[in-house]
Image 1 (tube, rainbow, N blue to C red):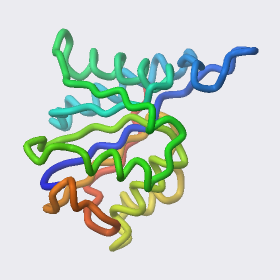
Image 2: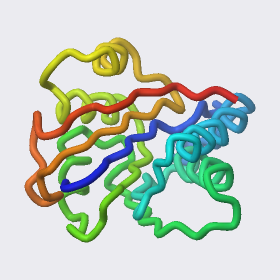
Image 3: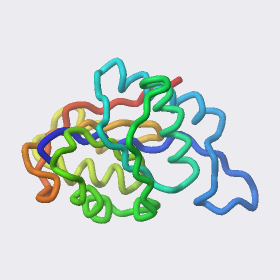
Image 4: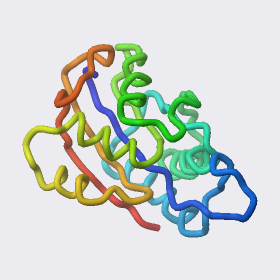
Length: 170
C-alpha cells in the first residue's frame, strides 16, 4: 500500500421499520459520533487523499458528517463502491488493490464484520495494544490506522502495521 490505510466503521444506525438494510440512516448517536471521528482524524493529522465508501446510506452519512468535521468546506475525492456493502475482508482487500500507487492515504468507510476482519488480516502480526483492542471489539465509529511499505496492488495479509485504533464519541 505504500502509505496509510484508515478503516472507519460507519456510525450507529437507526432501525426504522420497513426500511431495507442498505437504506438505513444514522441514528441520533451516529449523528453525534460521526463528526467526532472527523475531529479525531483532523487532530491526528490523518487526511485522506482518497475515500472509498460503501453505498449504504449509513456509511455515506457517516463520511459526510466526518468530512465536515475533518475539514469544513474541503472536497475529498470519494469513490462510492457497492462492493463494500456487507463486504468480506477479502472483498475489501480486492477493492483496495485497485487504488493507484500515487495515493498515499486511503480512508475506507464500511461495515462489520468486514472492517474488523480486514484490520486483523492486514495487521495479523505482533499483538500490540491497538491490535488487541481492535480484535476484542470494533464498535461503530471506530477507526483503525494502518501503514505498510507494500504497493496497494500487492497488499496481502500481515502486510501492515496497526498504528492506532480509536473509538471517537460525540
